[in-house]
Image (cartoon, rainbow, N blue to C red; front, side):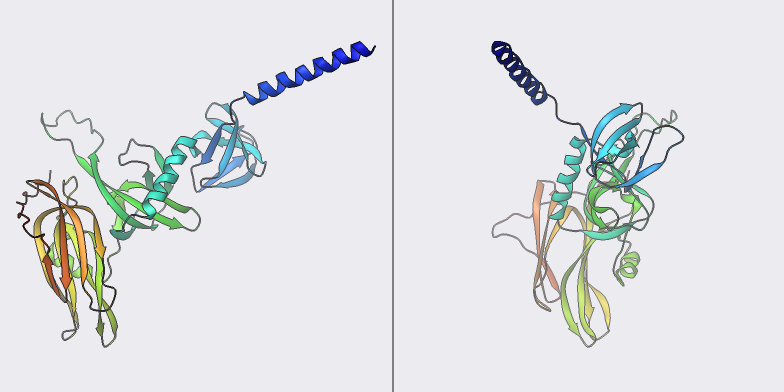
Length: 331
């Protein structure tokens, strides 16, 4: 009897070891993240079903099973239900999303604006890239970068042979929204409207400048308080240009006339974002800004310095003056 009990104990111990090894070799639970600002978790995937809870954007979920386009998941609170797989993103994409948010936090803002229409933000520029999230109209965003990509083929059989494919401008934006949280992504440039401070729209429209960014150089004292002085970067209208901007304009405050005046204007350059601004630290102080410029000799850094209302390009001693390429025509 004693030997039998010992034998049973050995069997139980061996079985426990085998069970532990099997459990330890199981693949980790599959994860997913909600990809909409509001995702309904349903009690069933049938037509007759009840909502269980609402998931926030980016909520972490355990995937339990799949049935067609429907996925059964469990929330961190232990609620189990069904969602449409198109409302979820996989962990690999979510890691890229969070990395992009971290990256854009430190990028210099080139302009601020808002979405003109319901807009899809994507992990990379292009209509065929993975979507991050969809945002509504009038969502405020910071504009950080621009890229040009080929537009989707139209399938026009009558298009002339050898004609260049149309291209679209995309903007990298970053924002914080109360019911969505912090997000970043690429959006079609035509879906973003820039919110220029007054009276810059009047001045830039008169000069025919399509603004792509603006910056505060410094502030000057006026009887009514401090007035900001601005640097504007822009181009002519049209998408698909190789240059992010081709014009610089500086607008300074005239205390006598009580209005802004054009203190500096330059055209014919080929600038690339980001422009890095070192604004003045005190009223009326000096300011510096830099950006990469494409010339016939390649890429170089363009450095400008502002003293009072005078802006001049800074050149290193002995540096050669590079020839500027002619901005490519709009296609």
